[in-house]
Figure 1 (cartoon, one colour):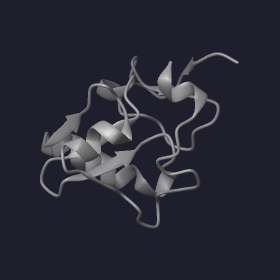
Figure 2 (cartoon, rainbow, N blue to C red):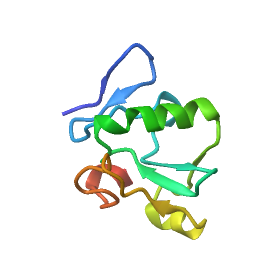
Figure 3 (cartoon, rainbow, N blue to C red):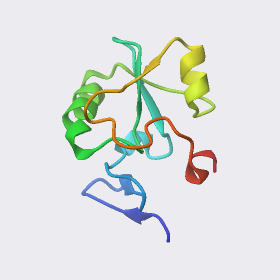
Length: 100
């Protein structure tokens, strides 16, 4: 199973195990934070219901990526994991794909 392009943006990817498309500028990041609310989103586990949330975040340009791309790093920066209705199963749980 490889990574296939998805959508009209050339940098938008869909991974076989995820339910939502990663934002184009964050194609290689699993965790994306909102600087306004200090909430971090595990994009790989979000459902399609979260698309408007992530879309609004990208439009606001108040997002944050983390290096290394881990939940622990986001928590070190005082971000809290999103646990709303669109969080999806496995929210914040590391997968083999996430580290590599």
